[in-house]
Length: 141
Image 1 (spheres, helix red, strand yellow):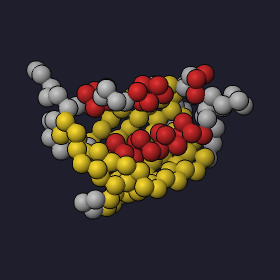
Image 2 (cartoon, helix red, strand yellow):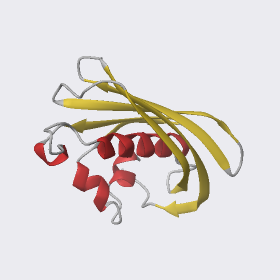
Image 3 (tube, helix red, strand yellow):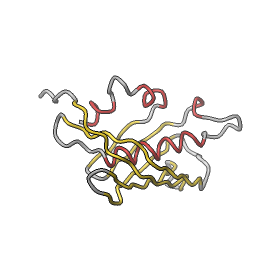
Image 4 (cartoon, helix red, strand yellow):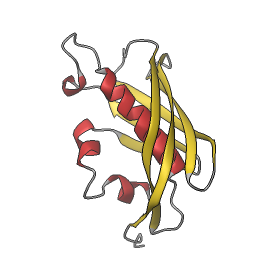
């Protein structure tokens, strides 16, 4: 399922950044992002907006696990906070998003971002509102 969702026709921003959804289950999502020069700011460091995007996206995936083989919830971000703790030092970063609570219309999630050596880069949290579902093609065996 995750391959179909990540490759949606309207997911150009996801392809632009280059992250991959590597683990996904109800209430939990892991994204991996190779560090490339296109992600760097003028100081030669990974831009903070990239880290904010990983917080936002991993939280969103965590809260929008598929309801069925073809139906996936949609959400929009209501609030988002990110704390930058350490520099990106490796070739890849991992964002681990986890739902903390919520109800039928709103959920709350947090994310931690690590370098590939396990050192902490950033943390973040947000609130998200469900906005219906979308259909994906059923997986053919």
